Length: 168
Ligand SMILES: [Fe+2]
Ligand SMILES: [Fe+2]
Figure (cartoon, protein in one colour):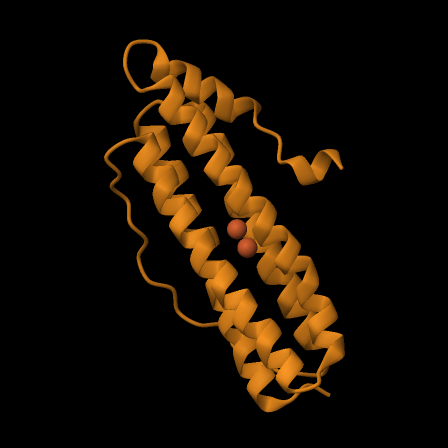
């Protein structure tokens, strides 16, 4: 059995992953309006991944006999200055998610809930990988620059991007 404060905190994380999925969906749609097909497909994939993160927690709660409460989501940002600003926004979101996962781990340890702590370790690793990916992509985008053919090259790079974890 999970403790009540852990059930509440995991439910909040469900909302957070769902919100991330929602945000990346809006980012993908913005990219479509800019004819950035590579960026759009990257963000659609990212949105699917966040939904998978959400489902993993929902399944964990159900498997533990706990109740899942699905919350309302806000309207995500739909305007971005350019593709670099969009990725900076996404990185900020990932950093907030990482901080939230860290708080969950702290709660699990405080509760002596070693099962949930072990479950959360997958997220600790995943957040590290995602932050690294986003930071690397932003660095490369800045290196390429948005002028001339830069934007086209950035979009090609995003179309081909494979997260490192999938190669492991
Ligand atoms: Fe996530
Ligand atoms: Fe993420």
